[in-house]
Length: 407
Image 1: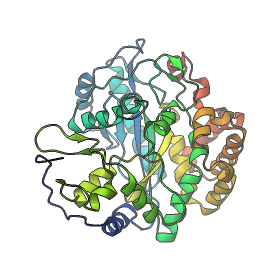
Image 2 (image 1 turned 180 degrees about the horizontal axis):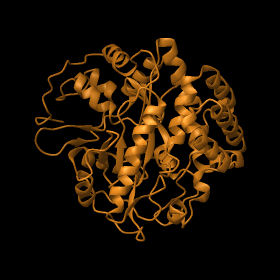
Image 3 (image 1 turned 90 degrees about the vertical axis):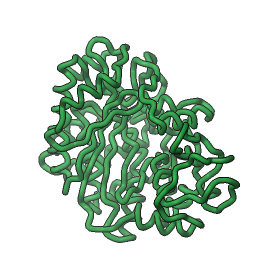
């Protein structure tokens, strides 16, 4: 393979796995006093009364440009299928994150309403099939990579799904980082089941409470999981090195999708006519990895389905509160231990699964007594409506979900 057009990088070349490990420990697992909170909220967008119709992403981008600046200073972007994403600034605490994002969610909804547009209260498109609307080189190469995999689910992920991503500090020192990393994985299936919100896609019931999570689990066997136990930096390095390179960027012409080697093979220098990777190449490789928890200097929790505009603060509050209270974390870890690896059961059954339902009740009952006063009532109402009844939002997301959300 000759890659004459691969971009030149002003970055340090990487020569072996140890250099990758050292870089990842410094960049992905930064230590410091924890407490800061951020969130990224994705939603699909539909036209009120016409949920099957496509909303052109160019129209949406133009409308969002008129909405700047957002009052809470969130950054707004669009995704390949026309999803809209609000990325909050880093806030010093949960209350600050919620206050700013709440302003911006309200602002976004008011702007969309001027064109009879609304945020879809589901984590997968309940009515429309996948349609890729953005064709930047990254997205073209990503689609080609996923099209070559069995199931061809990549375009569903790229264009028809949406999530709540919660960003939390990694920890005060290496021991704290390891404990927080492990906890976020331990509670993952339980919280994924509790917030499952995507059982209808393209006009039909899928048989999964979280069809979004089911897509992620089945889409790419080399990317869904990263080991949670032991040294996080070592486990993450092994994961990064083993993962196939998704694409090689080029200055001229199309990017090279699925070049056919792992990052470990690349850094070991086993490839003819391909220059060794640089730190910049490694940074880009990291953006193509989508585990349930992604270390980025902080921990980006990625396993929560998008919630309706009413409920989005609840997963942010639950995760931030668990990490802020060591006793609550210990109770949650013990409750979730029997279902720590039950990712598939969580996606398929939600809280219909008895063991997940038991774990969820313990986790939420522990958190609701500790959550900040500004969010306590909302979390308690979520518990009453869903968790205490062994239900999740998907259980009421039938054909009239749009009407239910606005009623």
